[in-house]
Image (cartoon, one colour):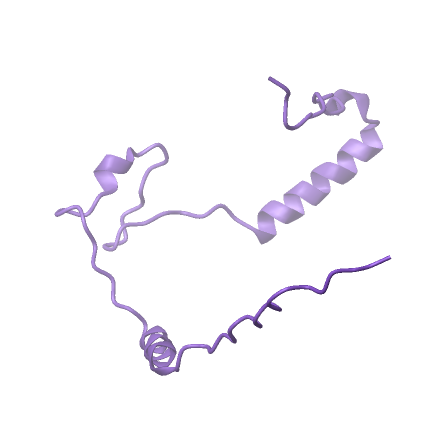
Length: 105
């Protein structure tokens, strides 16, 4: 069976130690600035308790197994507007000629 998609093999990334110290320092500085501007998200329960990393999803389920969420009023209005619009009219295809005239040489 022929392969549908040829994917090139990964050649990996350049080793950190292969970079000169100046480049390493510049990249470390950029990473520190990025981490300061974008701190990791801390997941919390509704009562404010922090959810520890690695907590199994089964422990986070809502009792009853199903959460009924309210639909935003704007979404309800948009749905009502869409249901009240008339259906798009599609033109019928043009009738084909009954029989093409025969060509004579």
